[in-house]
Every structure is written in C-alpha cells, then in structure tokens.
Length: 270
Image 1 (cartoon, rainbow, N blue to C red):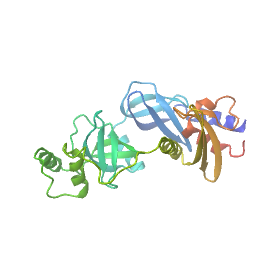
Image 2: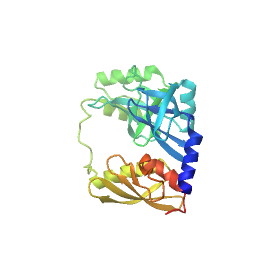
Image 3: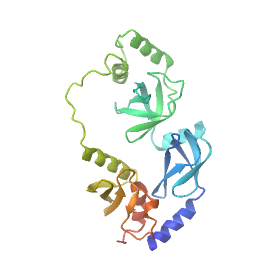
C-alpha cells in the first residue's frame, strides 16, 4: 500500500504541471516528472510543438503552441543536432542524416516548406527525431546547389561526407540499389527485444530477458540501478497486466515505461 499512497501523492502533485513536448495528431506525449515517466494521450486534435498540462497519469491537454524560445530550451536540454533532409519514403515520411553520427533517421514535424538537402535542428528520440526549426547556420545556397546536382544526376564535387551520402540516398537511381553486403532481416524476437529495450530505456532501465505467454502477453525482466523486477504486459501496446506490487487494481493505468518509476519508489515490495 505504500507504493499506492506514494503514487497517489505523485499524481496529485503533478496535476496541472506544464511541460513542452512534440506530438503528432492523435499521438501521445511523454514527460519525466521526478524520475517517473508519464505517457499521456493528448486530448486536443493538435500536431506540433506544444505546451501541455497534465490532466491525469494518462491524459494531457494543450495549453498553447510552444514558441521558438520554448523549443530552443527543449533542444538545449535534450542535445539537439543538425540533420540534413534526404527525401521522403513511399508513405511521405521524411528521412534525414544526423551530421554528428551519420545515422539515417525518420524525422517528424518537418515544416511544409522544407525541401531535400535543407538542414534542420532536431532532437533524437530512439530511431526517430523531432524537428525543432531550420538550422540557422546553414546556407540556402548549399542546399540549392545540392538540389541542382540531383537534377543533373551529377554527384557533388565537394562537400562533407554527410551531404555526399544524402545525395546518394536522394538520387532516384540509387535509392533502390542493392546493399553492398547482404543484411539479415531481424527476427520477430529481435524486433520485440528492441521494442522492449526502447520502452525501458526511456525510464533509465535495461532489458534482461522476456518470455512470451501465448500471443497476447509478455513477462518482461528488467533492471534499473541494481533493482531487478519482472512485469507482465500486453504484447500489442505494452500496457501493464501485473506489476508485481500492490497497486489496488490500478496496474492497467501504466505501461512498461511508466511502471519503472513506480517500482523504483517501492523497491522493497514484492
């Protein structure tokens, strides 16, 4: 019951608290409050960078759209990096190359006026990134010359490796070229492991192992700060079925990410 009382105190303390976050229409936002990661569905039909208020542990409401100052502060806190847009996939989703790591990531909230080879500032979130704003240090002439090189089917004569790779990825004749070495497709178990690791990583925990219980549930073993626990979750959305501690029937109020913080507050309960 100590964990439940602590949870109730935490909920009362955060109601109405405001935070900045990106969201796509119909999506969810995550916020870290005193070590507890809350994932909330946005009540309003909004897409973009917003300032939200926590309405409950599962819901947030839009207060107003986040201005440039709020987005810049978010970028400083979560170490924004420069990315070069290198085209859209068949579903219209933008991809970009991270100049710092050279990794190709899906980017969201790309401005409607953006074009291929434009440079943007974005914040990484796992395998995707959220665009904060155009990169103020980028020169429009550079992107324009790259687009002309693309039209001419002429590889850029100069420039750093990221732009050269972006050109290859954007060139229609090279997009579907076979990879230089065979790449094995991840197995269903690998994909599930990555999904669980990503959810736990958002709360500072790491995956130890998991066990499938039929086709609808998983027993997930994880560790954070030396504490090891096993949590039962639904396979399709990682909502908690059984947390392993007494929450008076409120287990389903949490998912695999948010339950980690609750368990950390009650390390001695079983």
